[in-house]
Length: 412
Image 1 (cartoon, one colour):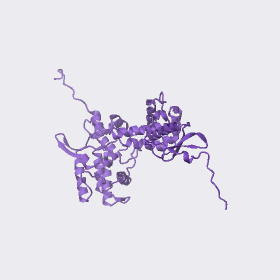
Image 2 (tube, rainbow, N blue to C red):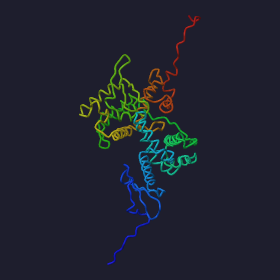
Image 3 (cartoon, helix red, strand yellow):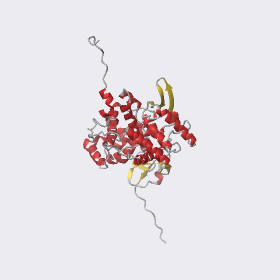
């Protein structure tokens, strides 16, 4: 029987040369020699084996090299390595996310900022720009990226969000001295379109159809339509809230207020898409909210201070919002209101648009700035999106109104 011996590769460490660096460093940080080179080599395991030539034959210098390598590995793991040491596009993108997280932790930015940016970076931006040195990115590269993602028929607003993320990365690179100037960004032509909303007659039909669906025992994806949906519809129209606000609304966020100015709900959500200022409801919202609480108690639904106001039994709030949307969509189908006469699709968000349009068409001497502040938006946004359908015919009385003139001495 013949015995075979395994021939070792020249780069294999010579066993007797393997020496831990010591000095408090991990035992797996070692230097060694091989038959492939006269120099000492360093080896360290950090999820994978890292090997580097020390470029020296002196053992003491090799240990210093190994110690420096170890410190660099730690910095890379903690994303603390100076950005100038690794000016790749993805490295700068990592630093952007880290800086934004610090602001989020301090409460200066919404936590959804990094969630949204990270999704776009991982799915589209990083794969496209992977391997690019950040200083080599030009207008042409960015324009090609836009052309690439536009093939998915993304809306202009979505394309602008992608451009904004890229611009933030390049701005950070410029701040760190990696760019002399930021390349010009491609222009995306925006087309404003009016939001779908409900006229007064359509709103009445919407409520009537909801009541009929409740009476008929309509079930949508195992969830029956109940008075809770009816309260949701009327509550939204009387509070100006976005569906995203309603989804996370808790009873502790609502205060019933009554003073010489009137009776209303003072709503202070814990976060908001824009400015998180208190919202003042219409007076009708008070009765709707009180009836909703009675509904929850009668059906033994959670209705304590920390419980959610709508669909409190659904702890997954993303699923709760999805359930609201599905039920509302069923009502829209039943009363043939899914599309506005002018072609805009209607969704749960249309209730907020309806609330704003009702104030513009039915309110007496409405202050646009005050309305915008209360709806947590801007006068520009109301003009561009919410009030786009506003026409003179909707409020003839205001168009034809006249200021009282002072009587002159000749007329007395």
